[in-house]
Amino acid sequence: MTNKYTYFVANWKMFGDLRTLNSLDKVIKFSKTNKKNKFRIIYCPPSTLIRPLSKRLKKTKIEVGAQNCHHSYDFGANTGQVNSRMLKSVGAKYVILGHSENRQLGEDDKLINLKIKSALKAGLKIIFCIGETLREKRNKKTNQVLAKQIKNGLSSINNKSNIVIAYEPVWSIGSGLIPKSEDLKKSISFIKSKFGKKSLKILYGGSVNGNNVDKLKIITGIDGFLVGGASQDSKKFIDIIKKTIN
Ligand code: 13P
Image (cartoon, rainbow, N blue to C red; front, side):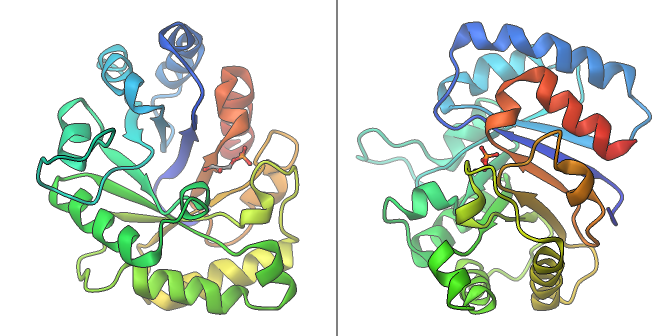
């Protein structure tokens, strides 16, 4: 861990309803008893829960984010879509963009770039996901893929101070597998080299849990974690945080 704050971002994906929010009482209590610690907890629930969750977290330091947004900053005839301004208006401070589960549904770098621009314009901070597939890894294309995703995804965005990178190897998501420490170190330092700016924050995501976080947290350049499955269980999420900060 290198930077001032360590980030713990919970990506709930398409899980959770109003009742689920009760389970967060444990995390709220935990964050209140650890006021001095320099970590940030950000919950990214489904859009339907952003408003109730941000109300519930009002008197806490826990922040709320969204999991995606439409690329148009303007309101319009886009059935089923939600844009960055709408998310901001219900309490989101962050938005996850470029997640591989959405790339797999057809989102390309160009569309992700438009989404990032629209979200920045709305005043949201971006958690920008990048990562290689297993095939790309086997073909030794990891750096090439990361470089392309960064270049195209962040094309013509000069001020990157509100962008956090989340390195999530696609093959690691939900598989229980994490990269070898050597490989992870190389990818993180490669990503850093693309920015040449020390304050860039990089999160790691992909099967983070209480059993592997000790291995992950010692990798130079990692500033926190983007947690999927384990973040739905407050105990498991707190365990990850405790093991990282202690
Ligand atoms: P898992 O932690 O379930 O592997 O998911 C990671 C992820 O996709 C977070 O965005």
